[in-house]
Length: 504
Image (tube, rainbow, N blue to C red; front, side, top):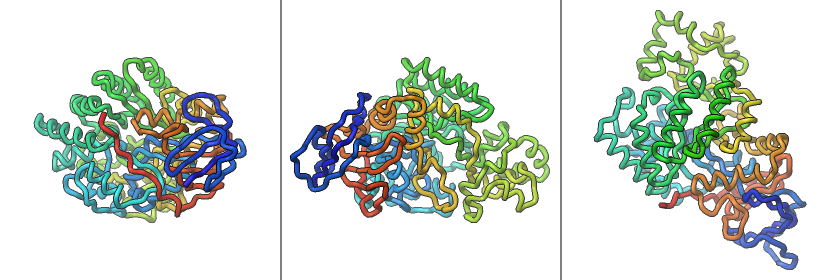
């Protein structure tokens, strides 16, 4: 099968200015870039001088955490915004390895979505996906700290330090995931109880990743008043073991803009010695887990101890004083395990229905969801988001799942992250070739995703045709057109590859 895409402005991902050309696709690959006036292709697409780039790479997707990977394998929301490759396994959670052969860690997060697995190792996980599923996008994954640690300690309800023997086992297990195709390792140090994870544990594990030339992605311990100290810890780790590092969703929280600016300055200043990047999406909302609203003094409690305190009537007065003041009109229930009727409901309406204050509503939400609920909250400064996105160290990511079962509430970052970034870049005067490289060749190279991220002969034909304002008209994944003239074609969204990181 040959496809000839004619009369386009090729933005090849190298950072060079666009070049007017035709692009010839043969089967899954780009065969040539140039002029082919007499070539008789099976299919011809006239680009009308639109930009043609490589497919966009999302370095932080959570489609595994929500299991949308299986419930919506076409990845329609992502393909429609030009994303053709995603990296999952973020913030300490991944679907493998799983010593007990079930997704028990995911089940504890959202009991509505439960799945059994027929894999244990990371290699078996990737092989199962490759053999048994047809995905719309190319998918790769990191291995999650939380998942592996909970298998090793057996009783995740009580956090404790690992013994020397357990840490050796952990390092061996992590090494095996890297050898079997994982792109690296992620941790969620901002989540209870993993805020207690000692530095020496993370250093020992990141050292394994560095030796295998993988990526380390970290959700930091503190993103507000302790942001700068958290960034310093990440920089120190990256420098100590020489591991390529990504800070997951670095965010300018309202009230902490100065700390955010200082963090950007520190990362830029230290980059020559510590290769630390960060990912962002362009919208002023963040998904906040219920346990993140706990007072600082409770952040190191085990979940059961924290829940016991939350339920104690004698503690309520002090809790209401210590909980943050949340604008209930700007907070919406994003996830409520066992209570699907709450999804898409604003915290304001939740409070009104219960005839309580906003703070009391937040407390009741935390209790009702057993600290497993998630609010979608407008708490970021959009001006500083733009500044972060334009940094040379930032990566553009949805930080989201590609599908949601909340029909009335589809976050824009799940559907419009990459077009919105292109609009922001254009308004800021960033050349299109630089903006495109930032979402194609740069992340592909950083992750070690081979033969993707460039429009060049021999590369996979992951291609996006778009206008200057970020409107996506056509998307190809491995040579197959899944978006045609702006319309998503679910039946064609089956050509994605399961990505294995090759051994260095």
